[in-house]
Length: 555
Ligand SMILES: [Zn+2]
Ligand SMILES: [Zn+2]
Image (tube, rainbow, N blue to C red; front, top):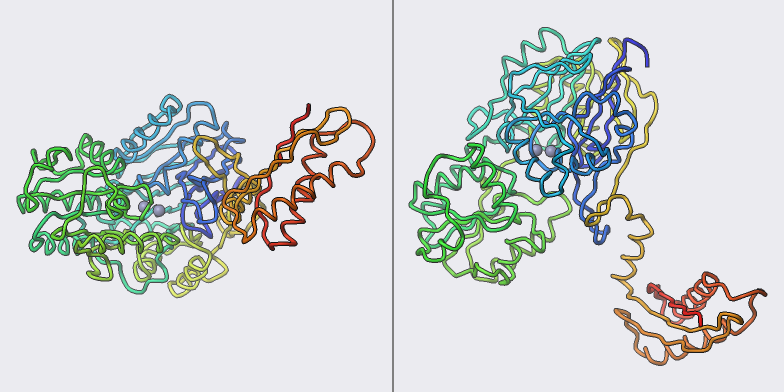
């Protein structure tokens, strides 16, 4: 790295939706922008979360001047507890009040609060981090207190948008300041790192105001209870519901842990409207007539154990749906969740409720991200020399490059980086100069990184093909079978299972009592032999590959 260069390394969030994390560094100083999670894909059975591989940051902690959080969404902050755990020492984390307030809650839960030195920053504030000077700029998004980063470096200004859109009439939070952006453009911007997730959508994203209006028509006409489900982290949406409930003489209760937590923290930090008596406990709500009830429900993504899915399945301990209930899904499924969300909606209809989702009333949700025209307008305002699209699938990054070309940034000046690629900027050039260790780490319950592709393959086979357990006792000296084999099958279906298992027993006996290398019976050898012979027999008879679990006891 030469003195007059700055390097940017996306550790996540490029070529994918989720786990946003970007390094910006010079020879002496390093900043990590966001550290988010991604929800597992369907084939990652039993995996709870996916986080970025932070090896590069962990190897360079001596240069780390700060972790800067743009806003409170999970895809930007969710990996912080794991990063702290891995670092095993106190790291400085900067973010707005709401971002840090919600983060503190998660750190406490995971018992890593002592590893975080949290420092609050406000919009408009400037801070120095080694050679970098960062100005935090308020932007419109679906959570209040969202920040873009204006990073002044020795070679020029880098603008990192965070998640943003232009919204001249936000319900809460900042208006993305066009004049400030224009002034930055006048002064000169070297590189624009922009969220590109909605580049496929033409026009402009509607204001959050239209959602408030759509919800208002629902509140004006609903005959019974109103249940609104949205991302618990979308604080602004919660504010709209609480205000409307107040106007229409309803009380509001949270249903589901995520929702309860956000409402409590956002309330404590002053992000909810000061309307005493509107928010009540779920217990109190049971005694009210339906027309005076509104519920904020977790689980807009159809997560099977969430409050909404349980209500839809008639399996919730407190809430039973009734015919005059109105259920509002104020969200869109994130890619991959369409099917489970669809099933939840089906089930809600089956309970007889009126269900309002985007297909029924479009404005019941709007995105917090800039669409095509806004993305182009930002480029026109900032007039950057280089662009680096972030926060999008690869196709979106390509479309962003095309869009930037129409706004005056030639295609060769827009860099499409994959995870771990090192992008080096000088005042005159951008190029990829290498790759660092990076990728995905799977989190399974409390263990980080121990779920490998082998584990996933086993789980897949268990789920799809079942398991056959073969227990056998062998003589320690001779290796001959002295007990069993006993075979048991679970989740494995075959027309003549008994006959098959009988033949499998004979096959195992034949294998184990047949020719073996001389010397004492070796455990691993026996297990391998059983797997091999049993697997071959079962596949030849059934064309199936169940998981085979040999239990060998030496006596
Ligand atoms: Zn966001
Ligand atoms: Zn995001």
